[in-house]
Image 1 (cartoon, rainbow, N blue to C red):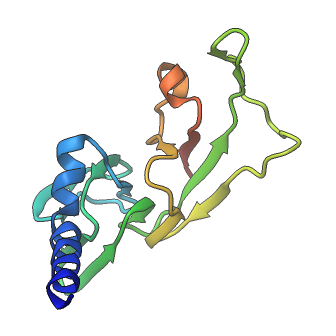
Image 2: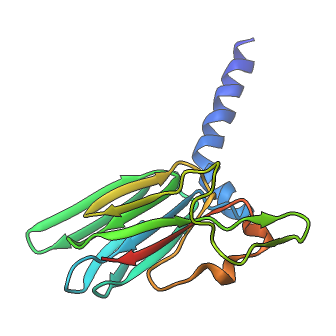
Image 3: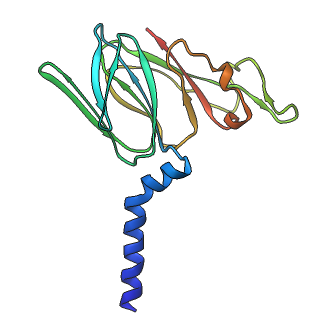
Length: 174
């Protein structure tokens, strides 16, 4: 009886430690993060061990299968380090805020297509709208329910059937 319990515990531990590898092989990305440089100078940072750089006012969206993600930025004497898990996240590395706003595009089942214009005030849905300053902000805990779009990228090429259940979160510099 004890061997059975030990076997279940070992299988659980092995599954836990290899879950990110399994997710990556199967194509699941548990984390989506938009990193924005809200400062007036270029920023260098490290995301999950990869050295990256952003120009002033630039944003990039990254996807990851890891269950624990880490971003580190060193700017002279100042250091910014944050750790986050699965979900939809936004990180601002500068002092200028970025406005994130959700746009609702209705999926029409009979036409199997999106209605081409956003609906400003849907009756049964509360839309996300916030100006986010420096630091880490968690938008949602879901794995793949949002599309985070950097400034000046529009959602029209994403209005496809595979995105019919996703939320479209656009961004705009302030």
